[in-house]
Length: 388
Image (cartoon, rainbow, N blue to C red; front, side, top):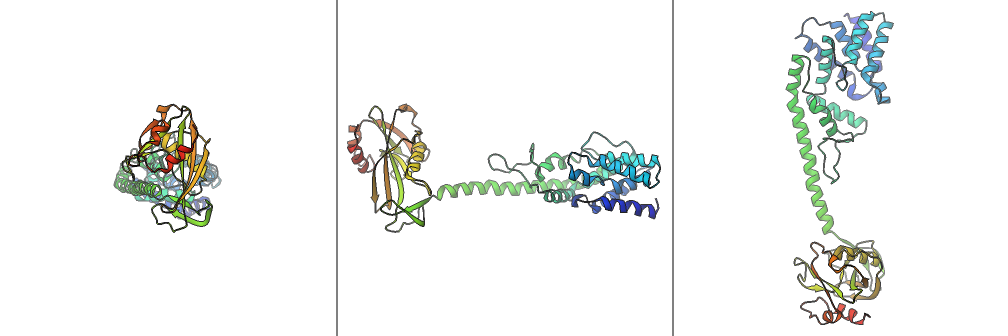
């Protein structure tokens, strides 16, 4: 091949190239690697090989615009027409066309000629090692795809069996498998030299992002569970706008956080009492209510419905408000509710970390429980006033 012919092919290649991962630099790397491989082979038709290397990706633009198209097939047809129009022989055009249409390793159209096998290996090598990783990342960024996908539990997927495109998915689907099939001995040698770099990069990156998610998610969950925000209320149970309270922090005098208590009475007249978890303040003692602090944004009823379900498993929105009390010392504004239920008495569920046992007792037994066994006399006074 003379210089004039090379320049003709080079200009046509330049007019067809588009995306940055398959740019002219990729073309020249493939060409130079192909020359390296060809040096170790016999009877290579260098004119066919050089032409095929220069023009093997000219169908990329069409595939990018329409992913259903195969750039190898499109490129082969374009090359064939171009060569005939520029007075190359039909035999030459057919050979180059075969090389280009057989260079894509994701299809069942294996290369037959020596030149096609060399192009296949040279193009495949450009996706191996650190260079292959860099090109893949470059392309993924260009088309707006992610580095990795997340599993349903929020952890990082290693890419295995992922359907959503990402760098990790591409590595497991393609890059990891690049080293299994080369047609030439030299091509295989070059690829094996690069393999360790790609494996190490993938493993290191997976480790880094996985460690970040695994530890970070656990710490965030802990922080969110420990950091409970409340609305601030005045003594008249009105929200103080612009003030947010945080569990564990000191509350200014005259400001209160909302607490909802739910007295649970069975249709047969018995009352539900819950034993506090040993790890809590007043652990082991009994309460005549379910309940707790209202989260920021919750109304008293919403809080009561949630706390009742979390601590007992009883689900209902039919609650009757029976009183309100302000405790200045505890900075708490209590809203008391009554829940009358006909649930299976054995169906009560305990909340881990909150309650450790439950009992159903009649009204007289409840009212006669001592203050070293039952928390607050206040609830006994409320219950004493209830009918039933």
